[in-house]
Image 1: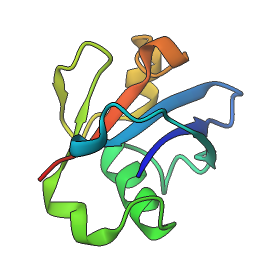
Image 2: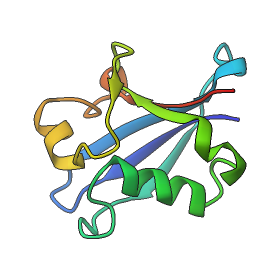
Image 3: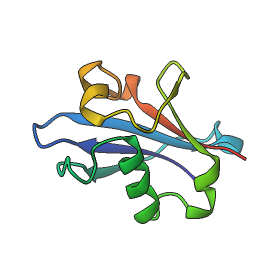
Length: 104
């Protein structure tokens, strides 16, 4: 289970997210598109995480062992808003993609 999720905002900006199972970090990522134009329901990284689990991109049994990192592998808080991250350039390109790490 290794994938990349592209999330789009109403203004046409994109939030790139990759998610990786820690034990399979060497696997190639694939892309999926998640529409987050509803900023009320997909406001912050916790909301995006909820969506990832609800849509089945990651099995909910892994919820307790997930965390967010930026492209430099620094941990992010789930309360970071999508718009704030994009304003800082985080997740705005494949090179700056945010990482949802699914560890054990």
